[in-house]
Length: 98
Image (cartoon, rainbow, N blue to C red; front, side, top):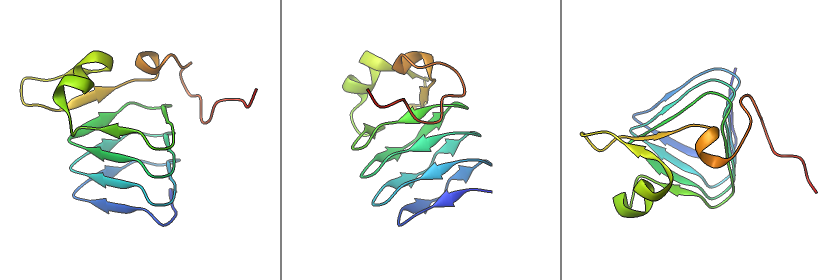
């Protein structure tokens, strides 16, 4: 199952083993398995690849110029996010604290 703790999800598909933390908002997006989305994130018009960790306060899908610096954007404006684009290993649920 998924854990959606105090977050809002609108017109989106959330796959298994996904955690969406407090005060985050997901809209018009597909969140693939084993993704963790931190607190206070805003994600729209995005596909988040399996095993990606989205850090607290991350905003995706609101500013195409900023998104293009870090992610791939399709011709229709969908933002594709993979663990590799964020410097993470695949299937990383949450980075180790240092």
